[in-house]
Length: 367
Image (cartoon, rainbow, N blue to C red; front, side):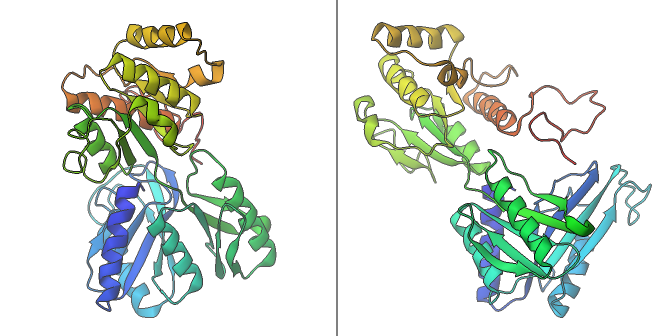
């Protein structure tokens, strides 16, 4: 799930609990074959049958709500299996060719593991929640190794903590179910800070880019020295940095940030590009033709600034996917599509005619 979906789910949960409503969270814990969403997708179900977020394109939700109402009443978590490869599932004739396992658990704020997990989700902090699909207990693991809670099986507990720590160290960690010692399965749910997109330039074409990135769950930060352009009304929800190029030393973007240089001003672009490349980021996009980025690099070299192979490998120029984008909204779509493909290890090509599993990628093979 992206950060925007998580915010919606948590907001609805807070409101429901303040009204004294019972609630359950359903989480996809296993996928085999084709399915609409992957492991780690969550849906909130309230005791009146209301739901927030979705686990599929609409084919699972009604059945999951029925199971969730039983879980809210009993307090006993359940793992439900749904086979989408049948010719007719609940009379819908879905035919997706896969199957999905969904774990449904009542929300209990008094449980310390639940409280720690919800707090991590609220704060956007890195944490992993390990839950055995058979057996008792849960454990939340933080990147520093701190663990809250235990699994009933000591051997499985040690295995789950190790798996959680390893996955928290990945660049793009994904939720997964793993087979532990003795054959027991453990679902490792993951929460990581939202991805950061730093946009250098608050011009007109930055508006749809910031808005679309925000909708996709990015922490959007905009840098520009022009106060009239850099306003909350133009960039709702974004963090704004009123900084001239010579003041960038006061800016400390996180190491995981992705950078996009689009000042439409050669001097500002040159300084911002150098700053972005020096930041250690893995993705630095420059708006405009390739020749423009090369001219910026040549100007920097003439000033005595050179960059190593690793820094230059981060440069994306021209930035975006080749989809014929012209309008600012289309350019924003092109850039964010490329950024998503790059982050998740995909090539960004057409799916048409693809006979394999579309969620497999060189850096993230779905089991």
